[in-house]
Length: 132
Length: 400
Image: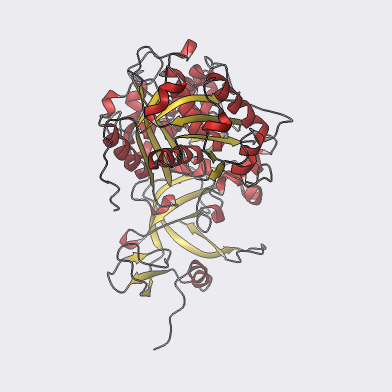
């Protein structure tokens, strides 16, 4: 049996750059962690397996950011939100190609892989975003 | 879910007593370093308590300080002990973002209750106004989750804005109700000579101000401020040796939640506040209805409204209604943020928790002048770190 990829945030982003949304599922109690964690926060096991997650989800809440940190100032104003996938799994991110008038809690959004490049030294992860 | 209940032998009795307190003016302190601003707070605390011999009596110091980035200065415990003439004592910086000095206060209580130190100073400081808004936004954001929040451009106002969006959607809370928190706290701040902003702000100004992160506007945000605060804690049994008017802390709770807002069960309430409050109320053996006044962490107006619900001052979803009733204004059933809160008094992040304790000290010793709450017996403070991954709740009682 081959060793699975490490259950790290770095690996989570690596999968995203390959077009895959992956969660870490605890082999012992079955709890699904998105993003993956070093130990299960339910049963404290550290045995996981990777599980693909469908990138279609619903908007839990959102905002439109006008005052941005220096690094993001060129993008402002931009919308961000928290999206819930199957099994109640949630991650936040930027919402692209939507106007503020379009935004509604509960609207369907799809994860879009790798739309932002990065030029910084650390971390060299690729940003994902959500689209309608 | 964790179980934070413990066996507690002091139920309903003082844990520690506040024998003195000090606070610098909050505002812009051009040309002063944080350590010099803290000197002003310490000077006031020492001056108020002439029977205290600092070098002889004070055994330890716990300092809330959020970040080295502002002044390029870490190691704030030793720095401040040195600059207020207490070099030699044990002094440690306590960091829990904007909840740093609420956590320092809790740590001071640990120290006194353990029996290791009979008298300690707890305080906090932050010097922020020499930095640009973009820099401050970036430094504050460091208290949010890095890999999924900061990394995706989510700011602090952005996190509280997402709570506001959800609260408005779920409970029908309005932008006007949220804005009224700012109007109320600016009114209170106009009565506090140490507040950063001491003027009334009309509702139209709040509602007409620019969006920072929709639905939160400029006037929904607390101020970027320089300031320092401290309180001196003693074992309750010896408090009267130092002052005729101690204030007793009878409940102390501190709790955490997931660092990322996205991982929390609710985006319309703070579980950390609820847990910390449960502990504090249980220690104090009182119910929320018994609280006469409170200083709540209004880093953004919505945070105060949500805290009404989390602390049990009203039912879930009815924070807007409680505000509209006038209950939380001066003269109401439970005035909230008589100091002006973070909104008007200002929010030098590391100093905020003990600045709340300073206001309670003034109120419960009848020294709050034009903003005095008459006959107040019980006060409560709630200090939040970040978007709510930390909360510290303390309950105070007038000396009887």
